[in-house]
Length: 113
Length: 115
Image (cartoon, rainbow over all chains, first blue to last red; front, top):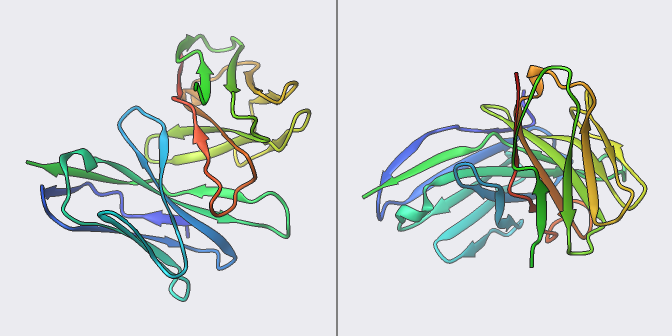
């Protein structure tokens, strides 16, 4: 089983739709979680960290479920500018050594007019 | 404010040639990373550095070498390029290591083709 798995999509949704992505991770020792956004032929940029209690940033809501080992990203009222690939990122610490960021392969979102 | 700058942005190499990718950051970050991104594979860590003069192997280090002689620069070297090293390379940096609340900043990427 891959360490971090995401549905690659693409998710094709109309403007104004609500869309949700899930990401599962295999290592229960995973400590920290993020969602990054990557536009075509551009570098990844941090969208939001994911906290245990869940967190919201405008139209974006992130949730963490440690028992089931998955995180989710909900985008409400989708905009054309939300079209991008969304990367799930998990940090795993191994016995106190430098934590390693593990990237999912990304979920592609395409918002249509 | 330049952030993380990578050079060159594009390069075509012949098999067996050598080259160096330069990453420079102006944020006084301790940690620097080199990733490669291939279609359907996601980002994979090649090497990283936790401070000036230190380097460590990541997930896919074979065929690459790195150096961190100055805090602001992290060099990625290909001694003898192979077609399997055709990829997009991203450099990144962060103030602390990978922890919650610590943002990792990426450069714009370097597109390398080995023919």
